Length: 164
Image (cartoon, rainbow, N blue to C red):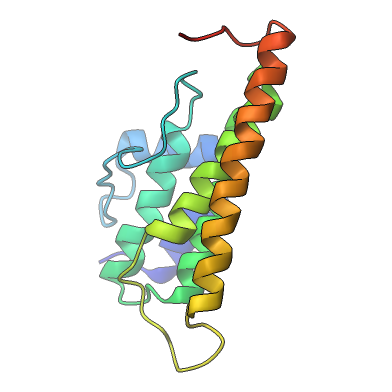
């Protein structure tokens, strides 16, 4: 098993491009590099390049589980890093706003649906109660609306094709 410091460094301490280089080399070999990519993710009809961000997100979940430290707090930190990585990927896209709004949908989806096996460290504010769950559902619905509006605007500007 890889050390905690190696996993945390690759997850939070290096740019996404450097993480991807390590992943491509499977370096170090002591970590879990397995990933299902962006499966179970919301539709991405404009093929924004989120795969590297999904790889690092899976890396975080997988290795934190192996190291038995996949708590609600750790999940929240990994998910926030995922959002940062998604936004980084959007920098190269002409329709940046639409890409970022879909990134918000992905982020809210993992907050709501991903990593349900994360442990609650102690009975405290870490636990996801019905109010927080309801807030996440509303946030997810709001991000979908914002994404659809950003797509329409990008299409009007000629930055994205109009899909049937």
